[in-house]
Image (tube, rainbow, N blue to C red; front, side, top):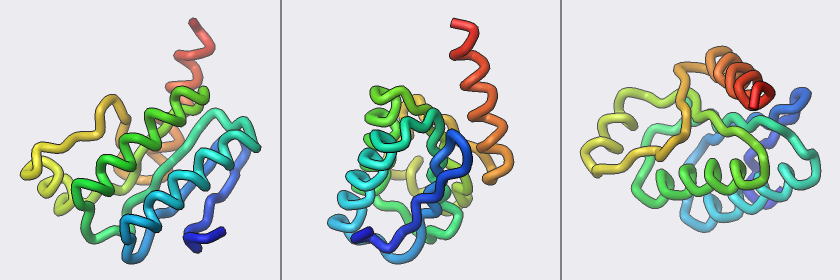
Length: 124
């Protein structure tokens, strides 16, 4: 894996603990790796854990949003977990938002959100 960011699989869910200093190229590589893993595993859920990040710039926010949208096109629901107050404030100050991407306080809550999303999809 080129980015050295683990992509963990637990049952039908991929968990990506995004951490460290992320340069634009690393973020793009991570996006490609996540999408390739979704294709290989046919997972139904993706959790992007950003609790270890101290800062998210506009490019990173756009890529997180893009990952979630691309994953949805591949049949995988995405939840972003662990957003700090600082990151939430920066995103609001920049006028950015994660379009139609559910967020949760922590990993446990994120897994609950995914369960609810799967249950809603099963009802359709």
